Length: 356
Image (cartoon, rainbow, N blue to C red; front, side):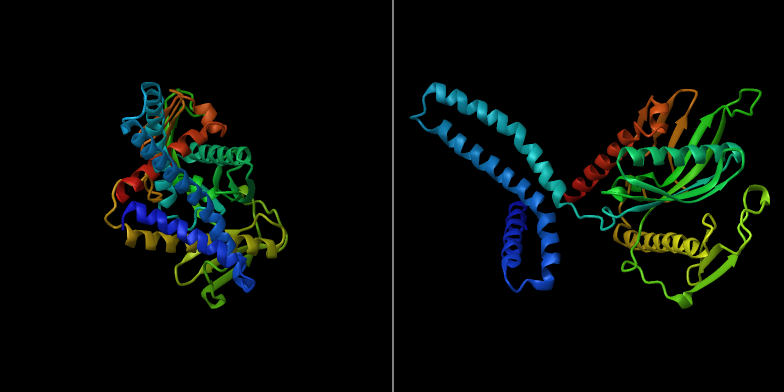
């Protein structure tokens, strides 16, 4: 099927949806039809703009070729052709991007998990910094950032922390953050002033609804116990902490931040559902793209994706070889979008190349 045929099919489908929505018997189907129609509308608008530009170029070309066209008219027409020749490739790219297969999870909310890796307390301090970086970035995007759990070291660092992030297109923007983040700097506690390297891992999971993944009660082992804080001191006198084990996969989630056992179980189930959903997505993606190489991010947490070098004031993303000399702005969340946008653009370019 040619590119033009695909465009005509989109317009035809858009018209069919509009007519179906107008039928009195649309009933229960109306919501489904309306969503598909609204999703398709911006795509069809781009298609029509491209078709109009191509039609205008053709008619202008015919005008230039007309022997009756005087020189002044010809010069104006040639200027118009030059303007259209700049406009048409961009319109074509917009349509091609709109036609790319959508990741079903892109519009979902996300759960982000940050864990200290190698490097002892310095790794924990870096994990806490990363977690706050994502929190600030979420606030700047006007997303809702809800802390689910934090396991701190008592010295300002985080052994691990997780949060739920709600908003428009959250997973689409954050999914490339999964992987190993490495930091190079002189620790505050280092008297000799030597640069240390440590790391933290980040996992970004699409938040799964109950309809996305079914979890049978018989597949769960739920333990309750008394919550404790850093160093083992008791923070609760009741058995409010919850540990849930998904027996078929061995995935374990522990939650103790809330004083209520019910709330801890609710948060633990949210994380468990997201982890199982992501594991299934990863399995399907691996089957679909076994031959694909060089993707922006596989989500493999063993993959070192970015280095934060504080002495040099730089952040380097190794997947797309981009370096920003504004580490403080990145860590404050205000320049993180530059890395995220570059990753999204790179991924789109790769997928367009595959289509071609």
